[in-house]
Image 1 (spheres, rainbow, N blue to C red):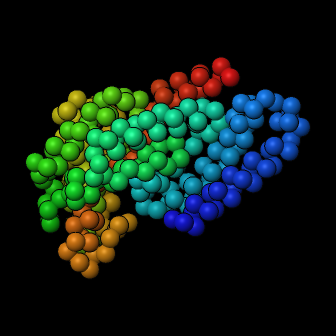
Image 2 (spheres, helix red, strand yellow; image 1 turned 90 degrees about the vertical axis):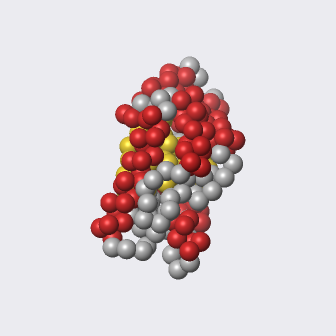
Image 3 (cartoon, rainbow, N blue to C red; image 1 turned 90 degrees about the horizontal axis):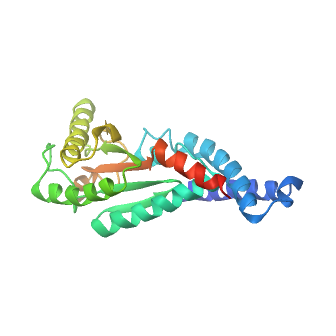
Length: 232
């Protein structure tokens, strides 16, 4: 992950250095410069991140980084996502919330929404925590949510993939029952891919039995951001 972050930063710096040397940008005001540099850096980063992260089994991180609007519109979206990420952190202190590009990655671990071994049943604790994050999603309707269900490494790959899909769908159904339009939510099973802890211990396997959220702007938010950017 550190290598990726360094690569992304270097790419963005190169894009910015190249563009600020162009005569058309030199003659622009600061907002216009930021938009031009951001748009080009966004395009570059979109390709880099899509290739380097999007190929990682369509993980939540890959989904968030897969599309980059860039420019002033991207900055507007980023501001909206900052606000929503903070609301999620406030609602669910035990969740891992990360702002990535123009989206949000959320890991609901064993302290929030985890699953017992070989089970896709939501516990009372899981439901209570999903109630909290559901309110954030209802208050921020202009986002799309992708759910990724995971298992530990015990059992056959095919079975784990099916179980992880069932877990993601259980969360999707529950959120839908709380008033979130299911058209906003996509559920995907990842099996035992992308472990966040060692599968050699009970504690590690418990952490890997999780659900991740990838949250991105929907088309309405993108259009609103472009309209706002056009006013600069």
